[in-house]
Figure 1 (cartoon, rainbow, N blue to C red):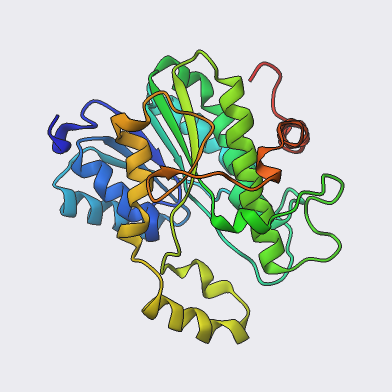
Figure 2 (figure 1 turned 120 degrees about the vertical axis):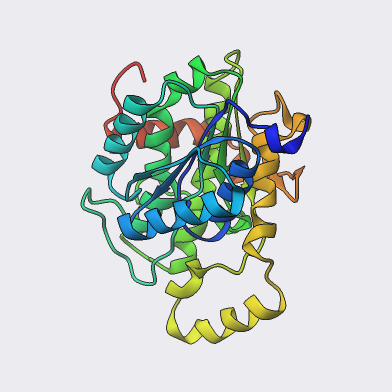
Length: 289
């Protein structure tokens, strides 16, 4: 099939779509003929980036929705608005992510890194599962990180009320994303909806602009010398969303378009189930979802 029509007739939702790898993946999806829904936080920037994607891809089927993924209320509204406009969802890309130098809490009382990188995507995915099932075959892609290898999981202190450090919080949120992938794959057995996580590589994006001031010169140098471009970082997202090579494959962690063994903790099925249960309580997920 011509790549320009690979996603023709398919609806694709991308969070964190207005910059970095989310924007580059969005351009690729639009070039492939998708009905693309870009999710951003700010109305003005989102409108500008939608127009950029339309111009760069030549596609007229690029829409947008607004949501701050850290807010559970906004995630619920996003799911409701999506369901009100679209009756199908073939690819869901949970890409929105952030880091925070100092510990902060969202309006829901959740540690901000955990909320953006994991809990918001957990809720959004669950609220759209019935649409994904109705659209099967469908794919869920969760952007994690190699940072999950250093991640820990204390279910009694998920938000690092004690011992917060930026990389500890980041690693935990990305470990949670891989555990979520593993548990969700089990729950979706037999539905033709697959879910896989990925490490996009060390990408030169603005996410690390929030790193501590003393580390910023290091990140600035790394961006120039070692880090890959957002376009290169988006390649595994696009691969997992479209490649026939991963059809039917689920519950895996990918790097450079290849499955890779995740951390020992990320393979702990009992921990994955306990995290799921804790997450359900935190987001107050309705029964039967």
